[in-house]
Image 1 (cartoon, rainbow, N blue to C red):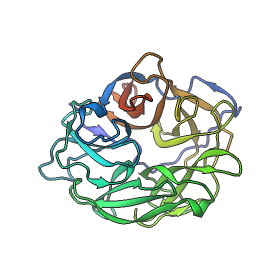
Image 2 (tube, helix red, strand yellow):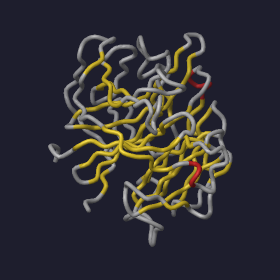
Image 3 (cartoon, rainbow, N blue to C red):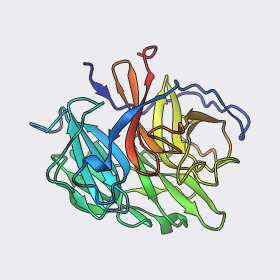
Length: 320
């Protein structure tokens, strides 16, 4: 088995490419993803007080954790800020074994876990209330200590600042080392947008005060759950729209190397849509990408009742 490659950890440059037509949808440059299976379900877990799962974040333990429980750690959160749980496996496809010490962090939701070279620790982001995202740190991926508040809704004048994903990524205008993508609802305009924050060390964060991406017609005024994906030397931000119950289709838009805002411009492409009468039912929520060998994996939340963690795959055989 080839090792897992965490695609978004990047710093690169290329020419800006935006296809005209802000309201256009169609076949895009990313490969086609196909739903595969449910990876984690609340009914099979001891720590899932609501029976519904909202978010997953996977790390590879090799090189960072001596004698780990498994090659991969999957962090998850049940619905309603119940806390952060952990499952582990020796395969990216599972099966996943629940950690007996759950929850790792109490009264928190929507985990994003990254190894930060600058601090030599795992950083976990989540929110215990929707107005801010907080950070915890750990050396073993199991025991986390609260560190600080990373981003705050009042800084950008939104109702919330949540659903974060952090990446190692250089922006020349800031001289930073890391970026964070997240969601924030502008009450005066009635739209939920994708926003950007940046950091030199992974600890202190600065928030941009204009949205990175705004919803367009047909997206239900809401786009959220953003993630960053590099594919064949190009830059894409993936997000979910609001065509289903607090979720729906997974879409993406291309960016230049410096992630300059597109607002409601830039062609939107459909990455994967829900399949009726299947385990994903009427919606996807968010998604994160991992590569293992010639397979590209997208882990996401799917369905509404119950909400479950699912994965889809695409072929990466043509990309080396």
